[in-house]
Image 1 (cartoon, helix red, strand yellow):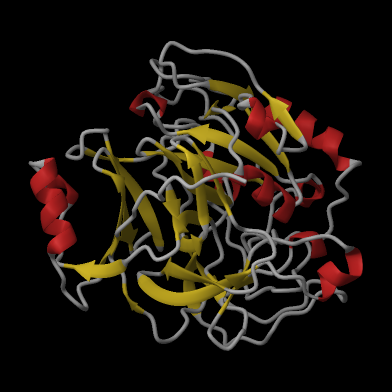
Image 2 (tube, one colour):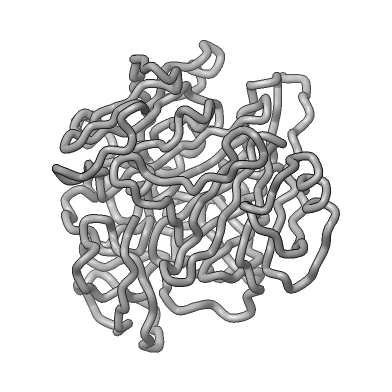
Length: 416
């Protein structure tokens, strides 16, 4: 997705109206946006209120085209089932991806695009995705796109963006705002797609309605320096169901976690890549965000994200685990403007907690979901799905660095 570089961390002033908290200069492995792979740039601590000129407040990294930061975030509903939907196109460019349970053992992504828009593979590069949707070279698409879900509206509001989806049930659509429906089909049945050029055009239309400012997306603290008091985290297992298991493996060379997912068989774990560039999906920050889930039917549910005073979260970065808290409560900005800002993360004392500059993947997780360390295991050693499932969930080994998120499906509750 992006090559790792060595960046000298220096405290600099990008412009008079932007400030940074002081940091000690160190050498650190820090990722760059995809289009800046071969360039050396300085990456310094930024946020939670002020960011340097051209710095993306959702990644802490400079953008090659700062004018794109004036476009509102696009939030695209991306399918991950059936397995023919994989590999998806465009995810390696998404600063934030929210993964949520949608029922029947399946998950879906709400991928946020802000700043760097996806680019296609270069001419002449082998196209290994010719049998899957949107295999364009030189004319990139994002997808496959599927239907909208109730939690999308809260995320849209918090990130001041607009939705792109493939329609939604009427009871869901009536709860959503600022959305564009994309219709289409493909041979895999995975969903439709949208050209990047068309997505930019939609963003331009919303530019007048949603006037983007640095403050509107502020709240995140980024620092390449590793926070103290973390616990080893080599691997994260997030089994949504027997045939929907996600594994994040820490790659010390990339300084990020690479994503692996079973092929809906619980045995064959495949490294996930971006169809556009064949690069592995590698995210610097993996978040387990605990929130109240309300399941009204098998495939109808919502998640409480708005105006939460203090919720629990776990951050994995740089091969370490940190226990955090998150909030969307109204602070001075919200009270002054009447608007909301993105989810913010803090330590036990309420201080902003620094994420690593780069991309973030969020697993929206039901309250009370257990998280524990197990004995070390490898995905390629799994032969029997039922046996492996039981063994991994029963084993415990403190200090192993192999973490399990013991996901459970929320019970169906009456709807008011």
